[in-house]
Image 1 (cartoon, helix red, strand yellow):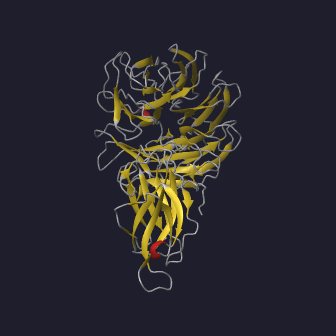
Image 2: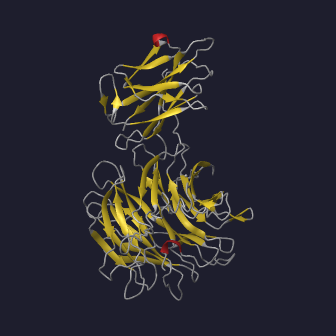
Length: 573
């Protein structure tokens, strides 16, 4: 059975200043496949605003869905399917091994309608009985086919990987690199990468691997110009390449996009470590102004164990910035990687790493990790919550969906709710920044000021927002209040605290009780926020202020009183 996704030949005051972004792993979208075995989520990419609602959308591949595979153009707001694309049949009828949607990439507007378009890899496309593979470019606006390119090599799995590049031949349109990891090149079958002109439907350049069975082209990524010639460049993985150090160690090579000349070559060092299992461009991690490269080594040896690792290297010359080691044996850390723009405010890009075979208490669940590009430290991790989830199979950068200037990311999984339907979970890169207010808030009976928090996004269209309060006295009851007006009113109505909101003040009709650790929270509806006389929808551009009132026994007192937390202001988008 053809499985091009993983071919192997060897065994994430009033103090009017924004607080630092929080990392709460807020789930933005939860997308679920339609049928067992569809491989929903095998690929996922951002594609721009297809349905003109002002928010970017997504494309999700399910290469075993339907007859030959399907791709779902999906709303970035609510996950609803805008359009379903199916395997074409112009060369031969699709079948169970066609694998339409095994790879995807977004590409700029090729047909002049103002909407970005979509590239779909079809590595199992049959041509005269052989699985040559193919690639289709479709209109993002309509789904109409714009270009259809066939692999010219029998059983080459052309289309296993696809990556959009800039205009390489001066025709005003973007071009496309395509991986064919089992293609014949010269005298053997090492695999190849081909540059396709979308404007002319011609092949501009072909680069081949070096060793038989090296699966050159199984991973690839485009780098913004690293050699200074004004054109994008290319980095290609051959994870089963035999190197000077060991058989099937794997290699990664960077090439000039303009000429195909080798810029640098990196090699694995151990047998069957699969150096180059995955590759991603990473926004400048070493402050040299050039995009860098994350290289997955899913069987990398770490301290004598097969934990996997990721090599973060300079895009300029391939020099090692750092190794990021996996922490769990046989978990395939580095099976998939993606680059993310700076999330933690240090100016360096981050690395999103998949670890799909992480074992938790004897059950394989998978995990994904956001790793600081500057330090190699984990910013946060996500772990699968059911057997066989294979969380992070794969991972992807899906761009800025909520308009806060930071990227969101997607993590696919094999199982969802006990069924192998496949799923894609999209997480916020960071929660909405808050304006922390009410500097003269008064400590409660714990000796601490109760602290407000806001988790989720302030983009009203998504309506994913949670209020949270910490440092409360355990077990106390309280409510949330809100207003579009900030003020400072000392000790209102005999309370021990400070009311820091005013005007048309509204109360949420949900009494909360603090946990033993002193916290409570409330999911809120941004389209129905309370005011004095009515519920209203937040409007982008408004700042809403939130505060907690809670019961408490004042310090030195004996009777039940009350207090207020500090206040947060949220600029709605």
